[in-house]
Image (cartoon, rainbow, N blue to C red; front, top):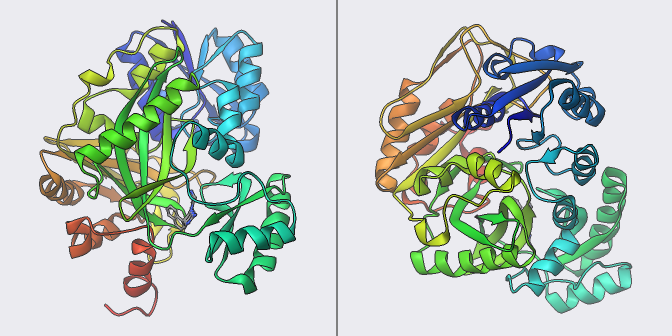
Length: 453
Ligand code: MV4
């Protein structure tokens, strides 16, 4: 096992990794920008190093700064958390060229899944069900019209270098395809330096269901069921739960096995998430994320595992500490993402947190780097806390979430907490009856300026 690990991240996820390291007897190194000198991850790590100015480009995204920090501190491995350099294949290569270990999948697997056309071709070949669409990329408008006509409208044009909602254009009918195709290509070229696009059947009202997988890097892999992450606003997840309210045990085993087999066959190493759209009882692969995700704690809660501990084990060449047979799904977990944002427009609201009181008690987990007197800097994303609750069943988890939200105190900045109180009062949410468009529709009816209430 590693003796010392550097965490190339900040906020709650940096704490999450530091905690796993400490429990495993691994020394932790925090890195930080000048804006984060007083941040909790700096205080909680065994050592900390300033690596640059506030701008993420010059600090948390600076490959030379992070490699230098490893050399100065003698860290043998880097945990990237999520975001920042976590899915940067070039970074992985540089880390390895310096004789260091990247805690995550290989550069090859990150590159493969980062290119959405290659990801989809790979998954299709491995027997993973995909959204009907073009086979590979679509190069010219004539082919685009032909393929769209064959698939049947509506279709969606997606950038191969996109993902997470970036670089998509909807064509509702044949009248839209020329504009959708050329705009998608132009925007993809401008945003990613790669104009390649592919075409899919547009699914009108699916859920976003993602399967947690974990590979041992030696041809073995397990799945840890699904998360329903349909509640999103502008492609940002707001609330996630596991198990999915619409997924039964037989369905979970069937799709879970398909996903675990797929990542086993490519020799995948570490944590991964296979994203699907789920409509009328059918799964359609869209993307694979090659990182630990923000919402991983709901999976940890229902399976009673520590995914970061497993990442550290597998990256250091050890075996995973459990096999598929030892994984038993227990109860129900829900996570809400608490952002420093002012409703109704979700405007970022940085500034000083005067008072912070975290909820506690049975089945409550709060992952946050906040403390009273902390000043939330304006330079990074607005997630300030994840509240995760676990109950024996979904109604118990919902009741616990309501109770825990009531105990939480964050004074000094506006937060998205009032949104969650309102959501918990909605019969659709109580029933688990929502799809990917539910939240934006609800916000339009309930929260936008001038809406009834
Ligand atoms: C789609 C889709 C409908 N049909 N693909 C958006 C994010 C990216 N991961 C994929 N996305 C979508 N792909 C087809 N063929 C609808 C979306 C989509 C969406 C997906 C998941 C969660 C929220 C969403 C909100 C709008 C659109």
